[in-house]
Amino acid sequence: MVSIVETGNPDTDDAVDNIIEECLNPELPKSFFLYAGAGSGKTYSLVKGLETFEKTYGTKFRRTGRKVAVITYTNAACDEIIERVKGDPLFHISTIHSFCWLQIKTFHDDIRYWLREMLPLEIAELEQKEAKGRSGMASITRKKSIANKLDLLNWLSTRQEFTYNPNGNNIGKSSLSHSEVVKICADFLISKPSFQQIIINRYPFILIDESQDTNKYLIDALFALEKQHQGHFGLGLIGDMMQRIYGDGKSDLGQNIPKHWATPVKKMNRRSPSRIVALANDIRYDHQEQKVIDGKPDGHVRFFIASANKPNKPEFECAVRENMAKLTGDTLWSNPEEVKHLMLEHMMAAVRMGFAPMFGALSASSRLSTALRGGDLPAVRLFSEYVLPLYQLEKAGAGHAVMTHLRRMKSPLLLPDFLKAVATQENPLAILKNSIREMIDVIDVRPDVSFFDVLQCVVKYNLFPIPQSLVPFAEKVESLQKEDEPETNLNEEEEQISNLEAIQNFLQTPFKQIEAYKTYVSGTGAFDTHQGVKGREFERVLVVMDDDEAGGFLFSYEKMFEVKPLTKADIEKLTKGEETGIDKTKRLFYITCTRAEKSLALVAYSQNPQLLRTRIIAKGWFEENEVIVV
Ligand SMILES: Nc1ncnc2c1ncn2[C@@H]1O[C@H](COP(=O)(O)OP(=O)(O)OP(=O)(O)O)[C@@H](O)[C@H]1O
Image 1 (cartoon, rainbow, N blue to C red):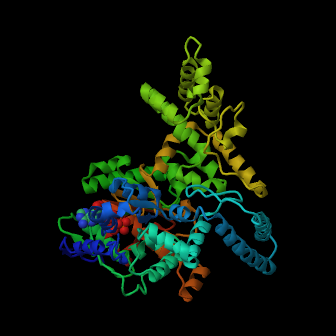
Image 2 (image 1 turned 30 degrees about the vertical axis):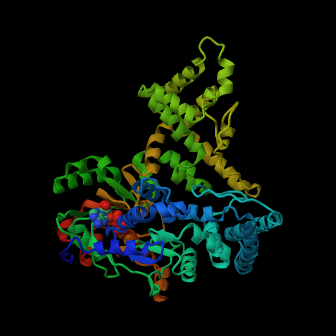
Image 3 (image 1 turned 180 degrees about the vertical axis):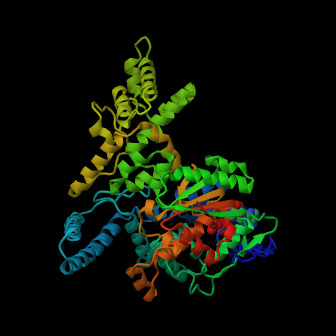
């Protein structure tokens, strides 16, 4: 049954901030390991530590040109911390990939030598697998991969320069992959004393939030760095093993923390009401219990179950919101924009927000996926960052802002050469005005106008520079965008064709989806994924669990709740003491439930709703009256 949560002293955890303050002393840097449950104020303490550091040592530290490095998991988390420290350049705040790339990006020769050592090992491994494996698709892919790597090895025989984009899909010989950048940084940290020295001189402190998901090689390298430079360098690891959701992290992090490290403990939950803290305590399998701070209300949790075959799921979720509004007395539940909806998969959000056709078309090419999910795909940005704001500003009658936008986006119609050429005409801005009017007409007249039609209008007037990837779909392109698609490795002709096809299919879908897509990728909308909201919090949270619609294999709520039996592979893993998808799903479930500040609605679509109800009540996580089968 649900455990009773004691209320505790709200001041209990304040000592932690003093410990961090002591660690962040440039005269005697000390490392710390702050691991605690969701909502315990880890990020809060991190920011408070930075603020205190600035006040105490900021001026002197700045003069020496050194910085405190703060590494977070997502761009959104970075932006949040940057805002909290008011963009102070004393702190270098970045994601792990940006951080690693910044450190290695000038070492082109060393990167080349590293790749020349790694590639033969990778080729040998593939050849070994090929010798043992059967023919078929896997064998064709392996052979292709071996040929690509051999070609790359040959290319690396002469000096080269490397590129990398932490927010994009890195394609092409000179482009490093996300995992290579992190591994290279980790290897340089371990093997190059001069590199180590550069890092600790630049950053006497490296603090990592959400470090449970930081790549294990890099964590090991940072532990080694700390050991060698003890007293001159401080590493701060902040996180929660129960919130580890990516396979990259170090699974035994926290065991064998060196004795000289500080290990402050946080016991309070600062975010959620008591009912949600009790649920979180029940889900945790490491028996770390949190207490609720005084003054928090009880809060509400409800578990709604419907059949996996339910025809109109968004309609059902709307009924759930109404139900929540009634039982909580919080009318904002009736407004979908005031509820954070957490989906297991991007496409589920795309369906509900109305941008599934464009998302589906572009997702078909795996090479485009990272940039698509991050809102960084140039072919889409033309519409989301150039055309849409122009349309919105013009419709709002914001003439001055329209011109500012066109100038900022480097509209060729406002470039000095063009303006000089039309200066003698009676009305030099007539072309610009006509083009904007036509653009508005094109979008307004037909509600289902396609991206393709909008593109033709942009091209006709040369309103914005066109990204390289859209050139094949536009006639008479005059100006190209600087932020082109990454160059494609010529050996990957098939992939190039599939990118082209994906973009072609995308262009046939309606332009009106772009606003919802833009809201979604900005992370400010009503929808997100279970994984995407790590570290964040929302007043009202609605979690959708639907294994069938998600179609993934990494997570299974039906298995976690024992509705679906374990597979042979799961049982084998369990017998070997290895981790199964059930543990991963449980951690994901823990993350989603602990985002709620006021109330939480869980919606599960199940193959067997009645059995699911029986199972979750038997687990003791929910009271009978909290589970509603429809
Ligand atoms: N000492 C404090 N005083 C007042 N508010 C606090 C304090 N510590 C944390 N909070 C508030 O509690 C909430 C949770 O804090 P925070 O996001 O830092 O927790 P967290 O441990 O990083 O959570 P998670 O692991 O879920 O990311 C935030 O709204 C934060 O502002």
